[in-house]
Image (tube, rainbow, N blue to C red):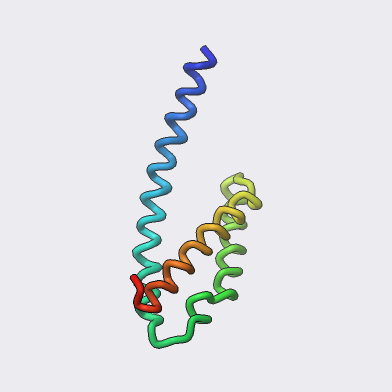
Length: 96
């Protein structure tokens, strides 16, 4: 019985992972567009630390509304944003 329950849980998590990755891919398309638009600006425009902090503030609030751990959401978003900044910097530099 427990094996069946854990498999059901794992299958649900796997489905969520598929949806999350699809949303990350969609977000990536917009990040690449932003990198192209910012080509005439300096790299600080790409890094945009003030924008990062506004996003973190926003997603922490969204996490609380959704009864999710704001700390987990913040950690995930900080990692996500760091990866996207690296990607956007590559686009900005004409490397991608």
